[in-house]
Image 1: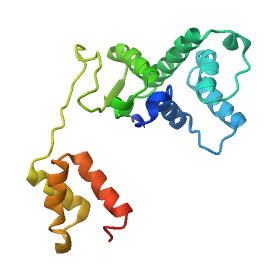
Image 2: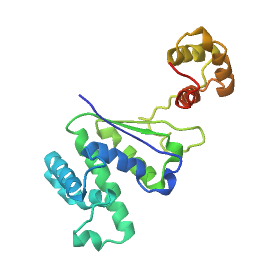
Image 3: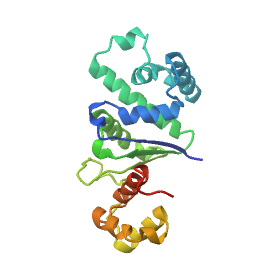
Amino acid sequence: GWLILESGSVSYGKATAYLPAIDLLKAYFQIDDRDDARKMREKVTGKLLTLDEALGATLPAFLALLDVPVKDPAWRALDPSQRRQRTLGAIKRLLLSESRVQPLLLVFEDLHWIDGETQALLDGLVDGLPTARVLLLVNYRPEYQHRWGSKTYYTQLRLDALPPESASELLGALLGDDPGIGSLKPLLIERTEGNPFFLEECVRTLVESGVLVG
């Protein structure tokens, strides 16, 4: 009975405002790469008004985020700081409205690459979580900093490197137990220092490059 929306930051994404938020909104509005401006306008308008007719006022902000031409003269008359405020408010309002219909799980991955506007969005959203049926699940590297740690409703789960036996078990699930790769597993564990994400990426790279087959 939950609505799950997922997005994530990428290494080159800091230079693009709202990039993870845009990806999340495209999934919510069911927009794909083949949709033209008219189709996107129809999908966004229909979704907003079906959820809550009062959300019609936020339509220009969502269209602008999705690079759909905005004809509303009032929106075009706003200065950049006003548009930013309206945009952040529109996304937060949409998500909280949706959470009143069904519980909402928001997943944002790799916050260490997040852009400033999406960070501002999450900061504003976190403040509204205690009264909403929203679970915000994020992951990030240790160097990333946020201001949520003092919140009573914030919980951090530290993901440490896997011990050798657990890393071997993970590789068994990823690679199988063929004797021909017996010597590869300890090498991967040593090179990745038991980091499960690096283990997965190394295996994926070996498969994509044709070193591992089958």
